[in-house]
Length: 267
Image (cartoon, rainbow, N blue to C red; front, side, top):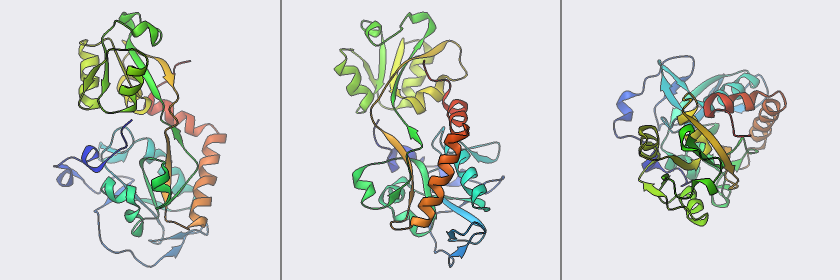
């Protein structure tokens, strides 16, 4: 997968469409932060009683607005973090450029925005334990008869150009049709102009999860992992985030969130 960038994640008319409504509030980008306050859980928060989260909204299915609320896979996790810190969630709409460079953390407690953990980014901020392995997946129509990547040879397979999915398809000998973005790829799949699509499980799994005409055929490990970012050296916050992630993993909540947003993984 191409690492999420400001250009691909933002929409030009987005700023006018954002409303600070619902159980999870949204705050505009920029501005200074208030003095740090200690939450009732003992973690220092930038704004008293609020867990301030930088996120690049919208980026479905991780963070986007629906029915006047900010929802998504990341927001489910954000709500659990805030609950454990006995705080409210306050989402700050930020450019992904500010998030991936760590500058967003000058005004936020954490950044949660489908951020892939890389060595470059780890030099700028600290990351939690990974909360999602965003591997590749092959999705196909039930009518295609495709049951694995070898069976996709000779079929019409689509990929997003310049991604790990495109490279994987080429390495496996697939003569894949390339699309400029995942939206066009999904449109082609649902229109039937291609038989299958190969790309990241997060986006493709979400696209077909409620459509019985399609299935996830195979997953392919790429090592791409998503993490929650905190300011460099903020070990108290990092420890609290990891504690919550461990709880969500141990009690099965994280897996439920995955299934809810990305659909059932292939067996």
